[in-house]
Image 1 (spheres, helix red, strand yellow):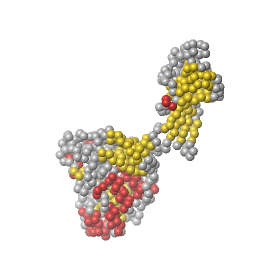
Image 2 (tube, rainbow, N blue to C red):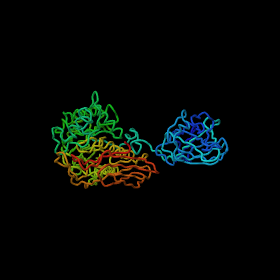
Image 3 (spheres, rainbow, N blue to C red):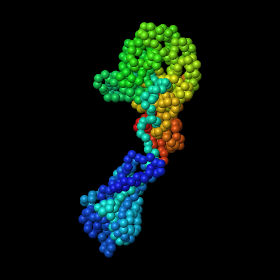
Image 4 (tube, rainbow, N blue to C red):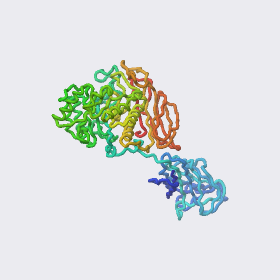
Length: 640
């Protein structure tokens, strides 16, 4: 704890034992001091070396009151400071029995024009003192007037006794009025979006544990380089009437989208992909797994652009080739030729021994013989050795059949906490077979066009899949997905979630790569909720097809979650739909649930009377709406 004394016109600082020094000191600067006299009602008495204060009957003269005026500017008191005291110090130039009071001056005044006839109004007395000794300082408590940094003015009056004579700022020896401001500052709140310090990219990349994010080419940052209010996403994917009404039955194709931006000049598609590479790399992600949907269309063009972007932006960020076997129909030699074309870039992910990693999605759509032929063609026809890491939709039913041709295994995974029980067993099966494992991690899943959703239970599914990956000893992680907005599985920054999912992934990937939980150095709150009740239906619009819960999912629930990362114990205040509630939260990570309610949601963490984190959701929970939306929206205090 640190106590400071701010002196006008000088500054002194008192530090409690063992306290760290602060980088800046506050100050209270004297800006004006003088006295006014009823006996000289039009005079401005601003040149004297003393301040005179006398009762209405001054000595034996009636109607001869004198008052002193002082003005200061206070600065340097930090927001959230506690135990603030403010003291006016005056030094006597004569020994008297004066009964003196100090008041806040409630009107503005100027040292050049103030007089008895033009005197400002005084407020009620803040403190009083009787009796002065020549040369001694007297302190008057004016703490009740403190409202923060800014300008303050205090007036002195006398109710009895002889005339008090006090040194002004013009007296020799620096004996004029001073304003002493003391405060106690709690722990400094470190600034930054994350609750921990993210290690450097070289430090994270030195780990053999790797984290990739699944890139889905249908949803780049922009489809037409227009402003977000009128671009293709707004006109055709979010709007139920978009694309000639083909998405009207389910209320529009998407419920969220990539963060918008103003139109760009030049090759905007390449610039956008370079930005996405930078965003993912800054979060600690090693690379993208690139969902290859076509070998000829605009998706193929985007595949090559993404690889080009990675090569241009960050040589340490790689792109893993993931031919999508639900979309591709090419035979093994044709697929090998296409993958070899992409693998000509050094940005394509390779093992330390030089093998190019190819990780086909739904690999079981082709036989093990097909993949053996593919691997052989890559080597024989193109001189490229391959490490095959199949991604299965049904791992346990297929992995043994593909073991001979595979370097590692993965599966696509599930998006509800109730479906995560088999993760450790999958990792064990892969390791026992001598293969590496790439664990899927996902925040949630809602698919309006397919009429299905998973109950993710706020951030629980993301946290659970990460914890299972860590506990099970996974080798790699695939975030499923970076940007598949049609399934609502994206962790990329978006209007409805900001960087919440990505920030949480940065925490867990740091644990994965360093082998330990990073210290929490910034108090941070994450707030998640839906904007509708799960069972609610639109009361307007033309939606006729609705999402229902996937079989095997956790039961639907309607909750607001406050997920706290705290440097120390704190009181968390949550307001849910207008209802305020508080609870004691311990240091570390904890989650608290509240029943969903109509209205706004916000939360704050308070420690020793100081708010150390606060977040307000920009999305209200509503009763009336035009389209069903079962995604969890979120906000974080780290990115207000």
